[in-house]
Image (cartoon, rainbow, N blue to C red; front, side, top):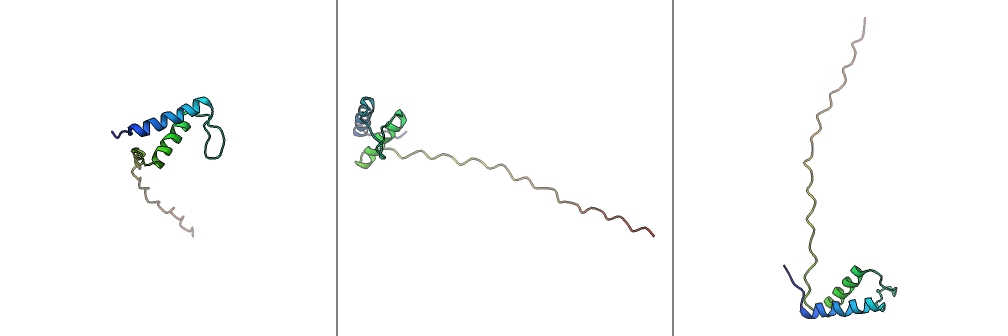
Length: 83
């Protein structure tokens, strides 16, 4: 499992400290209220500064169900004309 560098961990710690003091702002200028968002901001800032941060895990593509072949449709029999 990939690990974050010590400096990256420290950066996230600094950002969390700002978050707890209520001073952390998002890029739009609004106050950050979510803990997850604060961590994401810290990781993003660490990446920008060139610190070792593992790549985002790729999600496996959902398995496609085997396509069912539809039975060929049979043409309706025409009624024979009565004489």
